[in-house]
Length: 457
Image 1: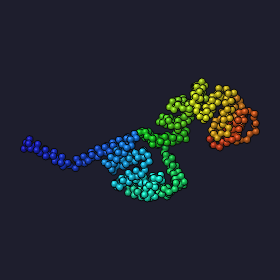
Image 2: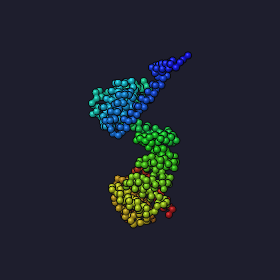
Image 3: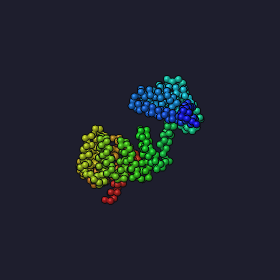
Image 4: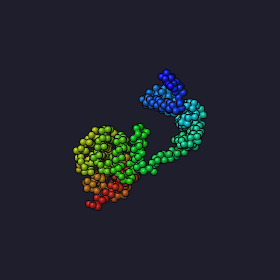
Protein backbone atom coordinates (compact mmCIF):
# COMPACT_ATOMS: atom_id res chain seq x y z
CA UNK A 1 0.00 0.00 0.00
CA UNK A 2 1.32 3.51 -1.00
CA UNK A 3 1.16 6.03 1.82
CA UNK A 4 1.39 9.83 1.46
CA UNK A 5 5.20 9.91 2.02
CA UNK A 6 5.88 7.25 -0.67
CA UNK A 7 3.58 9.02 -3.15
CA UNK A 8 5.40 12.35 -2.70
CA UNK A 9 8.76 10.62 -2.95
CA UNK A 10 7.89 8.72 -6.12
CA UNK A 11 6.32 11.69 -7.86
CA UNK A 12 9.28 13.91 -6.96
CA UNK A 13 11.68 11.43 -8.51
CA UNK A 14 9.41 11.19 -11.55
CA UNK A 15 9.40 14.91 -12.07
CA UNK A 16 13.14 15.07 -11.46
CA UNK A 17 13.81 12.34 -13.97
CA UNK A 18 11.48 14.02 -16.45
CA UNK A 19 13.36 17.27 -16.08
CA UNK A 20 16.78 15.66 -16.27
CA UNK A 21 16.07 13.09 -18.97
CA UNK A 22 13.29 14.36 -21.29
CA UNK A 23 11.77 11.92 -23.76
CA UNK A 24 12.59 12.13 -27.52
CA UNK A 25 9.10 13.51 -28.24
CA UNK A 26 9.53 16.33 -25.75
CA UNK A 27 13.01 17.05 -27.08
CA UNK A 28 11.64 17.38 -30.61
CA UNK A 29 8.93 19.75 -29.40
CA UNK A 30 11.47 21.87 -27.53
CA UNK A 31 13.73 22.07 -30.61
CA UNK A 32 10.80 23.11 -32.78
CA UNK A 33 9.81 25.84 -30.32
CA UNK A 34 13.42 27.05 -30.16
CA UNK A 35 13.57 27.25 -33.97
CA UNK A 36 10.30 29.20 -34.15
CA UNK A 37 11.54 31.62 -31.48
CA UNK A 38 14.90 31.90 -33.27
CA UNK A 39 13.23 32.62 -36.64
CA UNK A 40 10.92 35.18 -35.10
CA UNK A 41 13.90 36.88 -33.47
CA UNK A 42 15.85 36.85 -36.75
CA UNK A 43 12.93 38.20 -38.80
CA UNK A 44 12.19 40.98 -36.33
CA UNK A 45 15.86 41.99 -36.22
CA UNK A 46 16.11 42.02 -40.02
CA UNK A 47 12.95 44.14 -40.23
CA UNK A 48 14.33 46.56 -37.65
CA UNK A 49 17.65 46.90 -39.49
CA UNK A 50 15.81 47.48 -42.79
CA UNK A 51 13.64 50.21 -41.23
CA UNK A 52 16.72 51.93 -39.77
CA UNK A 53 18.42 51.78 -43.21
CA UNK A 54 15.41 53.30 -44.97
CA UNK A 55 15.46 56.18 -42.48
CA UNK A 56 19.01 56.94 -43.58
CA UNK A 57 20.68 55.91 -40.32
CA UNK A 58 23.32 53.91 -42.16
CA UNK A 59 25.93 53.55 -39.41
CA UNK A 60 23.33 52.15 -37.01
CA UNK A 61 21.95 49.85 -39.74
CA UNK A 62 25.44 48.47 -40.48
CA UNK A 63 25.97 47.76 -36.80
CA UNK A 64 22.66 45.88 -36.60
CA UNK A 65 23.40 43.82 -39.72
CA UNK A 66 26.88 42.90 -38.44
CA UNK A 67 25.35 41.73 -35.15
CA UNK A 68 22.78 39.62 -37.03
CA UNK A 69 25.56 38.05 -39.14
CA UNK A 70 27.49 37.30 -35.94
CA UNK A 71 24.45 35.45 -34.49
CA UNK A 72 23.11 33.96 -37.76
CA UNK A 73 26.15 33.68 -40.07
CA UNK A 74 24.43 31.31 -42.53
CA UNK A 75 21.38 33.48 -43.30
CA UNK A 76 21.90 35.32 -46.61
CA UNK A 77 19.37 38.08 -45.87
CA UNK A 78 21.65 39.86 -43.40
CA UNK A 79 24.46 39.99 -45.98
CA UNK A 80 22.05 41.33 -48.59
CA UNK A 81 20.78 43.98 -46.16
CA UNK A 82 24.35 45.02 -45.41
CA UNK A 83 25.03 45.28 -49.15
CA UNK A 84 22.03 47.59 -49.62
CA UNK A 85 23.25 49.73 -46.72
CA UNK A 86 26.70 50.15 -48.27
CA UNK A 87 25.17 51.01 -51.67
CA UNK A 88 22.81 53.56 -50.08
CA UNK A 89 25.85 55.31 -48.63
CA UNK A 90 27.55 55.61 -52.04
CA UNK A 91 29.89 53.52 -54.17
CA UNK A 92 31.33 50.81 -51.91
CA UNK A 93 31.79 47.92 -54.35
CA UNK A 94 35.06 46.76 -52.78
CA UNK A 95 33.56 46.68 -49.27
CA UNK A 96 30.60 44.68 -50.57
CA UNK A 97 32.91 42.23 -52.31
CA UNK A 98 34.86 41.75 -49.05
CA UNK A 99 31.62 40.98 -47.19
CA UNK A 100 30.70 38.15 -49.57
CA UNK A 101 34.28 36.85 -49.83
CA UNK A 102 34.49 36.59 -46.04
CA UNK A 103 31.08 34.92 -45.88
CA UNK A 104 32.19 32.44 -48.55
CA UNK A 105 35.47 31.71 -46.72
CA UNK A 106 33.57 30.93 -43.51
CA UNK A 107 30.61 29.11 -45.04
CA UNK A 108 31.45 27.74 -48.50
CA UNK A 109 28.68 25.15 -48.13
CA UNK A 110 25.86 27.75 -48.39
CA UNK A 111 24.76 27.98 -52.07
CA UNK A 112 23.19 31.44 -51.70
CA UNK A 113 26.48 32.88 -50.45
CA UNK A 114 28.30 31.32 -53.41
CA UNK A 115 25.75 32.79 -55.83
CA UNK A 116 25.99 36.30 -54.31
CA UNK A 117 29.78 36.25 -54.56
CA UNK A 118 29.61 35.22 -58.22
CA UNK A 119 27.11 38.01 -58.93
CA UNK A 120 29.43 40.56 -57.33
CA UNK A 121 32.29 39.27 -59.51
CA UNK A 122 30.13 39.91 -62.60
CA UNK A 123 29.09 43.40 -61.47
CA UNK A 124 32.63 44.50 -60.77
CA UNK A 125 34.00 42.92 -63.98
CA UNK A 126 31.49 44.92 -66.04
CA UNK A 127 31.55 48.06 -63.92
CA UNK A 128 33.90 50.91 -63.06
CA UNK A 129 37.40 50.18 -64.41
CA UNK A 130 39.04 52.19 -61.61
CA UNK A 131 37.54 49.83 -59.04
CA UNK A 132 38.30 46.79 -61.20
CA UNK A 133 41.99 47.67 -61.37
CA UNK A 134 42.23 47.63 -57.55
CA UNK A 135 41.50 43.89 -57.48
CA UNK A 136 44.12 41.20 -57.93
CA UNK A 137 43.54 38.92 -60.95
CA UNK A 138 40.63 41.12 -62.02
CA UNK A 139 40.80 39.62 -65.51
CA UNK A 140 39.57 36.30 -64.06
CA UNK A 141 36.43 37.60 -62.35
CA UNK A 142 34.02 36.45 -65.07
CA UNK A 143 35.71 33.05 -65.28
CA UNK A 144 35.46 32.69 -61.50
CA UNK A 145 31.77 33.60 -61.63
CA UNK A 146 31.24 31.03 -64.39
CA UNK A 147 33.01 28.37 -62.32
CA UNK A 148 30.79 29.07 -59.29
CA UNK A 149 27.51 29.07 -61.25
CA UNK A 150 28.57 25.89 -63.07
CA UNK A 151 29.10 24.18 -59.72
CA UNK A 152 25.74 25.44 -58.41
CA UNK A 153 23.85 24.44 -61.57
CA UNK A 154 25.28 20.91 -61.42
CA UNK A 155 24.81 20.39 -57.68
CA UNK A 156 21.42 22.08 -57.33
CA UNK A 157 19.57 21.03 -60.54
CA UNK A 158 16.19 22.19 -59.18
CA UNK A 159 17.39 25.79 -58.81
CA UNK A 160 16.61 27.22 -62.26
CA UNK A 161 18.12 30.61 -61.38
CA UNK A 162 21.61 29.08 -61.23
CA UNK A 163 21.24 27.67 -64.75
CA UNK A 164 20.02 31.05 -66.00
CA UNK A 165 22.95 32.86 -64.38
CA UNK A 166 25.39 30.36 -65.88
CA UNK A 167 23.98 31.06 -69.35
CA UNK A 168 24.27 34.81 -68.79
CA UNK A 169 27.89 34.72 -67.67
CA UNK A 170 28.82 32.46 -70.61
CA UNK A 171 27.31 35.04 -72.99
CA UNK A 172 29.27 37.83 -71.29
CA UNK A 173 32.51 35.88 -71.71
CA UNK A 174 31.77 35.16 -75.39
CA UNK A 175 31.07 38.85 -75.98
CA UNK A 176 34.31 39.81 -74.14
CA UNK A 177 32.16 42.10 -72.02
CA UNK A 178 34.95 42.69 -69.52
CA UNK A 179 37.36 43.85 -72.27
CA UNK A 180 35.25 45.71 -74.90
CA UNK A 181 33.37 48.87 -73.91
CA UNK A 182 29.60 48.19 -73.70
CA UNK A 183 28.89 51.20 -75.94
CA UNK A 184 30.78 49.64 -78.84
CA UNK A 185 30.29 45.94 -78.06
CA UNK A 186 28.20 44.63 -80.98
CA UNK A 187 27.57 41.16 -79.52
CA UNK A 188 26.52 42.63 -76.18
CA UNK A 189 24.13 45.08 -77.87
CA UNK A 190 22.54 42.29 -79.91
CA UNK A 191 22.10 40.14 -76.82
CA UNK A 192 20.59 43.07 -74.89
CA UNK A 193 18.19 43.78 -77.75
CA UNK A 194 17.04 40.13 -77.85
CA UNK A 195 16.55 40.12 -74.09
CA UNK A 196 14.49 43.32 -74.15
CA UNK A 197 12.32 41.98 -76.98
CA UNK A 198 11.75 38.69 -75.16
CA UNK A 199 10.91 40.57 -71.95
CA UNK A 200 8.37 42.80 -73.71
CA UNK A 201 6.68 39.79 -75.28
CA UNK A 202 6.45 37.69 -72.12
CA UNK A 203 2.66 38.25 -71.97
CA UNK A 204 2.12 37.70 -75.70
CA UNK A 205 0.52 34.27 -75.27
CA UNK A 206 -1.52 35.27 -72.20
CA UNK A 207 -5.25 35.86 -72.67
CA UNK A 208 -6.96 39.08 -71.58
CA UNK A 209 -8.51 37.30 -68.60
CA UNK A 210 -5.13 35.91 -67.54
CA UNK A 211 -3.67 39.43 -67.63
CA UNK A 212 -6.62 40.69 -65.57
CA UNK A 213 -6.00 37.91 -63.02
CA UNK A 214 -2.27 38.69 -62.82
CA UNK A 215 -3.02 42.40 -62.43
CA UNK A 216 -5.47 41.65 -59.62
CA UNK A 217 -2.82 39.60 -57.79
CA UNK A 218 -0.30 42.45 -57.97
CA UNK A 219 -2.83 45.06 -56.84
CA UNK A 220 -3.57 43.06 -53.66
CA UNK A 221 0.07 43.22 -52.61
CA UNK A 222 1.67 46.17 -50.75
CA UNK A 223 2.74 49.09 -52.92
CA UNK A 224 6.39 49.57 -53.84
CA UNK A 225 8.17 51.24 -56.76
CA UNK A 226 9.32 48.00 -58.36
CA UNK A 227 5.85 46.42 -58.24
CA UNK A 228 4.18 49.63 -59.44
CA UNK A 229 6.21 49.48 -62.67
CA UNK A 230 4.87 45.99 -63.39
CA UNK A 231 1.32 47.09 -62.59
CA UNK A 232 1.67 50.01 -65.00
CA UNK A 233 2.98 47.67 -67.70
CA UNK A 234 0.07 45.25 -67.23
CA UNK A 235 -2.49 48.06 -67.41
CA UNK A 236 -0.95 49.26 -70.68
CA UNK A 237 -0.88 45.74 -72.20
CA UNK A 238 -4.48 45.10 -71.10
CA UNK A 239 -5.82 48.40 -72.46
CA UNK A 240 -3.92 47.93 -75.73
CA UNK A 241 -5.42 44.46 -76.18
CA UNK A 242 -8.94 45.70 -75.46
CA UNK A 243 -8.48 48.59 -77.89
CA UNK A 244 -7.36 46.14 -80.59
CA UNK A 245 -10.59 44.12 -80.32
CA UNK A 246 -12.58 47.37 -80.05
CA UNK A 247 -13.87 46.81 -76.51
CA UNK A 248 -13.61 50.54 -75.88
CA UNK A 249 -15.94 50.71 -72.86
CA UNK A 250 -13.96 48.06 -71.05
CA UNK A 251 -10.70 49.75 -72.09
CA UNK A 252 -12.02 53.00 -70.60
CA UNK A 253 -12.87 51.30 -67.29
CA UNK A 254 -9.33 49.91 -66.97
CA UNK A 255 -7.82 53.24 -68.07
CA UNK A 256 -9.85 54.94 -65.35
CA UNK A 257 -8.70 52.30 -62.83
CA UNK A 258 -5.10 52.86 -63.96
CA UNK A 259 -5.50 56.62 -63.48
CA UNK A 260 -6.98 56.11 -59.99
CA UNK A 261 -4.05 53.82 -59.15
CA UNK A 262 -1.60 56.64 -60.00
CA UNK A 263 -3.18 59.96 -60.94
CA UNK A 264 0.24 61.56 -61.42
CA UNK A 265 1.20 59.13 -64.20
CA UNK A 266 1.10 60.88 -67.61
CA UNK A 267 0.48 57.60 -69.48
CA UNK A 268 -2.54 56.82 -67.30
CA UNK A 269 -3.87 60.35 -67.87
CA UNK A 270 -3.38 60.07 -71.66
CA UNK A 271 -5.21 56.71 -71.78
CA UNK A 272 -8.16 57.81 -69.67
CA UNK A 273 -8.55 60.93 -71.85
CA UNK A 274 -8.28 58.88 -75.03
CA UNK A 275 -10.94 56.34 -74.11
CA UNK A 276 -13.25 58.87 -72.49
CA UNK A 277 -13.32 60.57 -75.91
CA UNK A 278 -13.77 57.27 -77.78
CA UNK A 279 -16.67 56.25 -75.57
CA UNK A 280 -18.11 59.79 -75.56
CA UNK A 281 -18.00 60.08 -71.78
CA UNK A 282 -17.55 63.83 -71.93
CA UNK A 283 -18.85 64.60 -68.42
CA UNK A 284 -16.33 62.17 -66.93
CA UNK A 285 -13.62 63.64 -69.15
CA UNK A 286 -14.26 67.08 -67.66
CA UNK A 287 -14.24 65.69 -64.10
CA UNK A 288 -10.90 63.95 -64.72
CA UNK A 289 -9.44 67.13 -66.27
CA UNK A 290 -10.62 69.17 -63.27
CA UNK A 291 -9.15 66.63 -60.84
CA UNK A 292 -5.85 66.63 -62.75
CA UNK A 293 -5.69 70.42 -62.63
CA UNK A 294 -6.46 70.44 -58.89
CA UNK A 295 -3.54 68.04 -58.35
CA UNK A 296 -0.99 69.73 -60.61
CA UNK A 297 -2.20 73.32 -61.05
CA UNK A 298 0.14 74.13 -63.94
CA UNK A 299 -0.13 75.45 -67.48
CA UNK A 300 -0.50 71.99 -69.09
CA UNK A 301 -3.15 70.75 -66.68
CA UNK A 302 -5.16 73.90 -67.33
CA UNK A 303 -4.74 73.43 -71.07
CA UNK A 304 -6.15 69.88 -70.80
CA UNK A 305 -9.02 71.33 -68.80
CA UNK A 306 -9.81 73.79 -71.62
CA UNK A 307 -9.66 70.98 -74.20
CA UNK A 308 -12.15 68.89 -72.21
CA UNK A 309 -14.61 71.80 -71.92
CA UNK A 310 -14.15 72.70 -75.60
CA UNK A 311 -14.84 69.11 -76.68
CA UNK A 312 -18.06 69.08 -74.66
CA UNK A 313 -19.09 72.36 -76.29
CA UNK A 314 -18.18 71.14 -79.78
CA UNK A 315 -20.16 67.91 -79.32
CA UNK A 316 -23.26 69.88 -78.39
CA UNK A 317 -23.25 69.16 -74.66
CA UNK A 318 -23.31 71.72 -71.85
CA UNK A 319 -20.82 74.56 -71.18
CA UNK A 320 -21.05 77.76 -73.16
CA UNK A 321 -18.37 79.99 -74.61
CA UNK A 322 -18.31 82.12 -71.44
CA UNK A 323 -16.88 79.17 -69.48
CA UNK A 324 -14.29 78.58 -72.21
CA UNK A 325 -13.29 82.25 -72.10
CA UNK A 326 -12.81 82.02 -68.33
CA UNK A 327 -10.51 79.00 -68.61
CA UNK A 328 -8.61 80.59 -71.52
CA UNK A 329 -7.99 83.74 -69.47
CA UNK A 330 -6.59 81.58 -66.64
CA UNK A 331 -4.29 79.85 -69.16
CA UNK A 332 -3.04 83.21 -70.47
CA UNK A 333 -2.01 84.22 -66.94
CA UNK A 334 0.06 81.03 -66.62
CA UNK A 335 2.16 81.55 -69.78
CA UNK A 336 5.89 81.38 -69.06
CA UNK A 337 7.52 79.79 -72.14
CA UNK A 338 7.34 80.38 -75.93
CA UNK A 339 5.74 76.94 -76.30
CA UNK A 340 3.04 77.97 -73.83
CA UNK A 341 2.34 81.00 -75.98
CA UNK A 342 1.87 78.88 -79.12
CA UNK A 343 -0.52 76.47 -77.39
CA UNK A 344 -2.51 79.39 -76.02
CA UNK A 345 -2.82 81.04 -79.45
CA UNK A 346 -3.99 77.81 -81.10
CA UNK A 347 -6.86 77.58 -78.61
CA UNK A 348 -7.68 81.26 -78.85
CA UNK A 349 -8.01 80.86 -82.62
CA UNK A 350 -10.32 77.85 -82.12
CA UNK A 351 -12.67 79.75 -79.83
CA UNK A 352 -12.62 82.87 -82.03
CA UNK A 353 -13.72 80.83 -85.07
CA UNK A 354 -16.50 79.26 -82.95
CA UNK A 355 -17.67 82.75 -81.98
CA UNK A 356 -17.80 83.60 -85.72
CA UNK A 357 -15.43 86.54 -85.14
CA UNK A 358 -13.77 85.86 -88.50
CA UNK A 359 -11.87 89.14 -88.84
CA UNK A 360 -10.10 88.58 -85.50
CA UNK A 361 -9.62 84.89 -86.33
CA UNK A 362 -7.80 85.79 -89.55
CA UNK A 363 -5.55 88.27 -87.76
CA UNK A 364 -4.68 85.65 -85.15
CA UNK A 365 -3.98 83.07 -87.86
CA UNK A 366 -1.71 85.49 -89.74
CA UNK A 367 0.16 86.33 -86.54
CA UNK A 368 0.60 82.67 -85.64
CA UNK A 369 1.60 81.77 -89.21
CA UNK A 370 4.38 84.37 -89.24
CA UNK A 371 5.75 82.84 -86.01
CA UNK A 372 6.05 79.34 -87.42
CA UNK A 373 7.53 80.08 -90.86
CA UNK A 374 10.65 77.91 -91.29
CA UNK A 375 9.78 75.95 -88.17
CA UNK A 376 10.83 72.33 -87.63
CA UNK A 377 7.76 71.61 -85.51
CA UNK A 378 5.47 69.88 -87.99
CA UNK A 379 2.94 69.16 -85.27
CA UNK A 380 2.30 72.89 -84.83
CA UNK A 381 2.19 73.38 -88.60
CA UNK A 382 -0.45 70.65 -88.91
CA UNK A 383 -2.55 72.19 -86.14
CA UNK A 384 -2.24 75.58 -87.81
CA UNK A 385 -3.34 74.18 -91.21
CA UNK A 386 -6.30 72.44 -89.57
CA UNK A 387 -7.45 75.77 -88.12
CA UNK A 388 -6.90 77.54 -91.47
CA UNK A 389 -9.11 74.99 -93.27
CA UNK A 390 -11.78 75.41 -90.57
CA UNK A 391 -11.63 79.18 -91.04
CA UNK A 392 -11.98 78.92 -94.83
CA UNK A 393 -14.88 76.47 -94.49
CA UNK A 394 -16.70 78.85 -92.16
CA UNK A 395 -16.37 81.80 -94.55
CA UNK A 396 -17.45 79.68 -97.52
CA UNK A 397 -14.05 79.21 -99.23
CA UNK A 398 -13.76 75.43 -99.20
CA UNK A 399 -11.76 75.49 -102.47
CA UNK A 400 -8.98 77.43 -100.74
CA UNK A 401 -9.03 75.03 -97.80
CA UNK A 402 -8.71 72.07 -100.20
CA UNK A 403 -5.93 73.84 -102.08
CA UNK A 404 -3.88 74.25 -98.89
CA UNK A 405 -4.27 70.59 -97.99
CA UNK A 406 -3.14 69.64 -101.50
CA UNK A 407 -0.06 71.81 -101.04
CA UNK A 408 0.67 70.09 -97.74
CA UNK A 409 0.38 66.69 -99.45
CA UNK A 410 2.84 67.88 -102.14
CA UNK A 411 0.16 67.73 -104.84
CA UNK A 412 0.56 70.12 -107.79
CA UNK A 413 -1.80 73.05 -107.91
CA UNK A 414 -2.91 75.49 -110.58
CA UNK A 415 -4.81 77.93 -108.34
CA UNK A 416 -3.11 81.18 -107.42
CA UNK A 417 -4.61 83.45 -104.79
CA UNK A 418 -3.91 86.94 -103.59
CA UNK A 419 -5.23 86.10 -100.11
CA UNK A 420 -2.69 87.03 -97.37
CA UNK A 421 -3.45 83.95 -95.26
CA UNK A 422 -3.11 81.68 -98.28
CA UNK A 423 0.32 83.22 -99.02
CA UNK A 424 1.47 82.60 -95.42
CA UNK A 425 0.41 78.96 -95.76
CA UNK A 426 2.29 78.63 -99.07
CA UNK A 427 5.46 80.04 -97.49
CA UNK A 428 5.21 77.67 -94.52
CA UNK A 429 4.64 74.66 -96.78
CA UNK A 430 7.62 75.55 -98.96
CA UNK A 431 9.85 74.36 -96.08
CA UNK A 432 7.55 71.94 -94.23
CA UNK A 433 7.55 68.43 -95.71
CA UNK A 434 5.10 65.95 -94.21
CA UNK A 435 6.56 62.44 -94.28
CA UNK A 436 5.22 61.05 -91.01
CA UNK A 437 2.47 58.48 -91.65
CA UNK A 438 0.26 59.87 -88.89
CA UNK A 439 0.49 63.42 -90.31
CA UNK A 440 -0.31 62.25 -93.85
CA UNK A 441 -3.35 60.26 -92.64
CA UNK A 442 -4.67 63.31 -90.81
CA UNK A 443 -4.22 65.54 -93.87
CA UNK A 444 -6.02 62.97 -96.04
CA UNK A 445 -8.91 62.83 -93.55
CA UNK A 446 -9.29 66.62 -93.76
CA UNK A 447 -9.16 66.39 -97.56
CA UNK A 448 -11.86 63.68 -97.66
CA UNK A 449 -14.19 65.79 -95.49
CA UNK A 450 -13.62 68.84 -97.67
CA UNK A 451 -14.34 66.90 -100.87
CA UNK A 452 -17.51 65.44 -99.34
CA UNK A 453 -18.70 68.91 -98.34
CA UNK A 454 -17.97 70.24 -101.84
CA UNK A 455 -20.02 67.47 -103.47
CA UNK A 456 -22.91 68.05 -101.05
CA UNK A 457 -22.90 71.78 -101.74
